[in-house]
Image (spheres, rainbow over the protein chains, first blue to last red):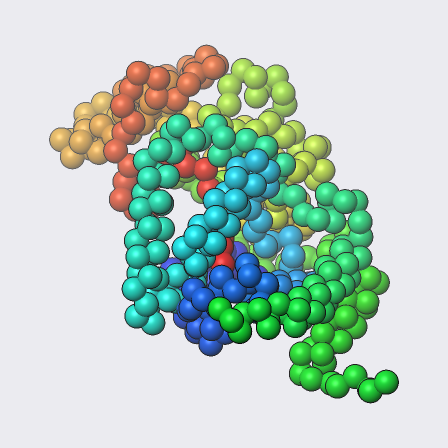
Length: 199
Length: 225
């Protein structure tokens, strides 16, 4: 039996919820240990004096990408069975902007706001209430937004397909981008950290 | 100039770079060679987890479930004359190159069951784990969903149980028959297409065992940090 184990192999919907719960606890734990339960730490990346968020998230992306690629190459995992969300270009651009503005203004993204809330931060709890209110409002307004929500549909598009590049080359380029990004981030931090001392 | 200091971060970055360089030579997708595990297939067939019944499919359609793809394997003419609502027409010859996702739930049907069984084996051989046969094919759909038979001398219990089947039949543009008509051997014609399911008829109550109703919902997963 090869991975992924969900859906057609080792376990179905019910077991997947238990496993998702365990992974979610782990995810929250590492977010908290990275300091991401603090809005100050998170918004520091917008002042360019602490780019930990960028580095942690990009590390996660590269680790997951290399893991999935090599497990599939070695035949331990079947990449075609991994579910992808469809690319809906325009609504995803708008959604990204909304999330970005919310991040700058509120100091959290959805996952980190939960981490902040459970560690007892009042701003995190208020942020979670805002997220829930937003989900509710979106759900109620969905009939009006449905047309836009489903627009710009490119199907299940991946970078190798979009750029007509070999899969392995895209993996290499993303790694180069990440390592270059880390080096750039450290340089930016050194450049802007002194300014943070006065804040 | 000082030698670069090897912190853990730099070591990890170097490992990532190395894996990235090696990745250029690799391909995560498996080739077109097929290895069939006949014992696994035999187990699937004997445990009867390779098919869905017409009643299950009818319930899925009524509930508005969208997490499966329904494939009509018959010819284009037969498809144009009648097909089960939301079915896509893919004659068997076109199936291997058709854009089906291997992570999708695929329900195959033909007139009887032979073509769908062959297509099922074709897909399983190409490692589509989510392929299913519509048990009995369009014939079963016609006899059990569109035109279910009520026994001529039905008991009150049988009549009550039949009432829901009759509702389902009307939803799909058919209607119940009494046993005498069914035994006469006359061929029953299918409803005329396009017969929008449930036009003017309230959807029958879905059975609890069929899972939660998700009318019209497009299946999506939410992701975020």
